[in-house]
Image (cartoon, rainbow, N blue to C red; front, top):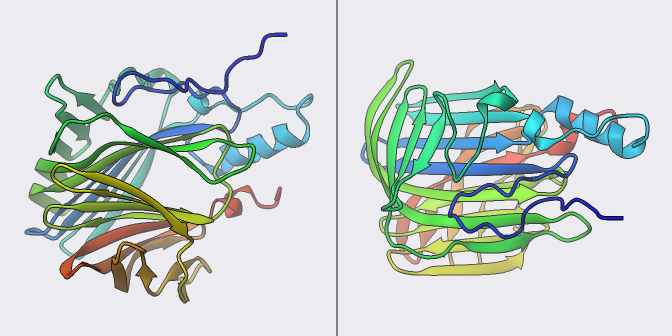
Length: 303
């Protein structure tokens, strides 16, 4: 009996969708940028399979009783998540989209939330109050790695590790011109991310480090004309609790010599936190912006 693939593994375009069909699966296109002059940080993520409480609860009901409940599909849970930190203000929002409004075709989404990769590889990112251009420092084929282990397949696709970013942001009381550095990647998987994870980026003058910790730590270092991927044991550190009981590291030490310390909690909820760190890599200082996610809390009491 023929089976339907859980996703398309081979994608020829830089931001092309993998058309994840697995119940509980997901695909995320992520953009992060930092402007040291205005002390502004931005994160915009486009989701198919946004890990909302309803999506995860439907997934576990289906997994426990597959003949009784219909499978929840990623295309049913589309969303855009925006976070901005500027002028000592932190703003975050999640906008849930109708499936008809989210058609990911070669990285282009219709409506007021979209990103469009042009022929020169420049990416135009548009969201309410956000208009930015991501200019990759150099052209190369995307890098891809498998995250974690087990029956589920989680993949990290690194499309544009280091970009020059320019444009403007106008959200509420935050009104700034933007001229900094950026990072762009994709995540996709055949079932939800269920283990707590830590992910983030360290922005330096001519370098950006992206890292993803879940059991082990994956580090991607991008310079002007180079890229390096490393894997090491999980981050070992003492942890601070938020008022919601979500923990974040006091210090993060990576094997490439980068040290992130002096954490500042920007935002926390009952299932995650955003934290800013001061970073030092081989004597060069910068800022790191990290996200801690505790997804299992969303599925309670089914777990």
